[in-house]
Length: 476
Ligand code: NAD
Figure 1 (cartoon, rainbow, N blue to C red):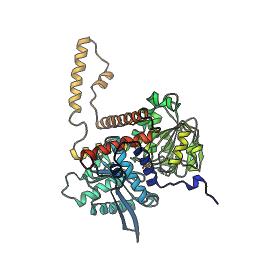
Figure 2: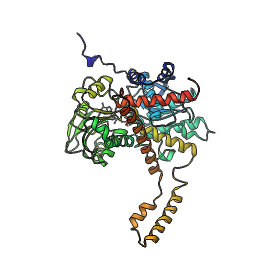
Figure 3: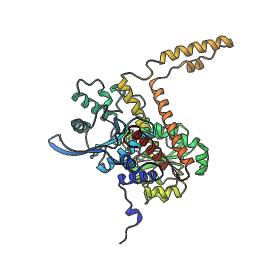
Figure 4: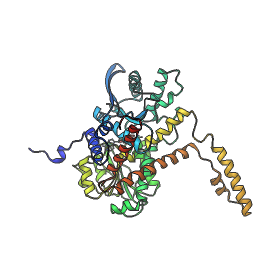
């Protein structure tokens, strides 16, 4: 029997990212050899290691892919999932190279992963697995502040990053800059304020820019402001939780949230805080009082909404369900959620796709700030906060003298407030996301052959990486 197009669809993320690259590469004026170098993955380390768990020994399979060393160190998350494969890690490393170029974070791209589901292991066991994997990376020189700097990704968070930093430190007792070997650490262990929520915050900034962009909205026939838009979010982990929370604060209505075991739908709006508390209590998002629960995890994608935010895994929007998607805006918070087949269908339906390679770059942007903080050994704002406050106080005093009017205590407090680390981090993140948005949309709006934002984003990345190679004198 002949298989349907949906059943035949190639879901290999490495092939998908290659196709996305090729589509953009065909529209840039660069020599083929240079394009080949930008596309290939420079090195992959595959490792198998045993870990004693109670009275049994289990062998784990892990990888670290370093896609491009055109800038050093290379940077990219570590993923823990049963679905991790070498191809997936290589694809995600490539996306990191392009993402860093897009937001001007001075890194090459890398990615790592271990094939196991942390849900089935205790915290002590995950710690052992993490420390052993880190030791394997150290042995082969696949981690270090100037070599390769991991960060959190699917299935990992600040707890794992703290274990990685501590293991690295144990192997390098003289190392002054050891904390810069990994980002996404807890603040007390050298992390930076705002990193945990950075990817979600960056997604919020990217969506905000799109909804301020009248020319773009007109082209896609999207009306109205961001406020009041109905949003569905797939994945209530780090990225999904934060983006739902921030868009709710922006006045959006969160009408559906999905998890691996199903979704909750409430057209009148779900309170993100209430859902988080419900999950903390019951260990599931399902059966939230006042909302309809479904045990079908993919139902969230087909909900009637204005903005759909896949924030879980790749290959969620496929040829099998693209025609059922009602959202006019697809905001890719996850990596690789849309297959090329689904993208073609969605673009034909007139959907605006804000691509992963730009939209979820907030995490690496704030990781960059954390890395710089670790190398400088100083908290952001320490040197200037008090100085700025005193200058502002003098200015406010001068205005009061000139106008012979005292400002209200509240206004005075607002005017003299010097920025803290979190404010500086969020301001830097917004700057990076806004600048990148302008660069990508400039390519989209001004180049006739570019008909989607993903291709525009890839062109932006390819041209920047090509410039670095030229400046290095490697290519003419
Ligand atoms: P996470 O592990 O914190 O959360 C992922 C959530 O998705 C989990 O709660 C999981 O239960 C849920 N999930 C799994 N399968 C699902 C399904 N079929 N339907 C709905 N939900 C499902 O991971 P995260 O850090 O939030 O990462 C999510 C995505 O964002 C990944 O694609 C990751 O690569 C990407 N990303 C993360 C970061 C970061 O800083 N953490 C940065 C850039 C991109």
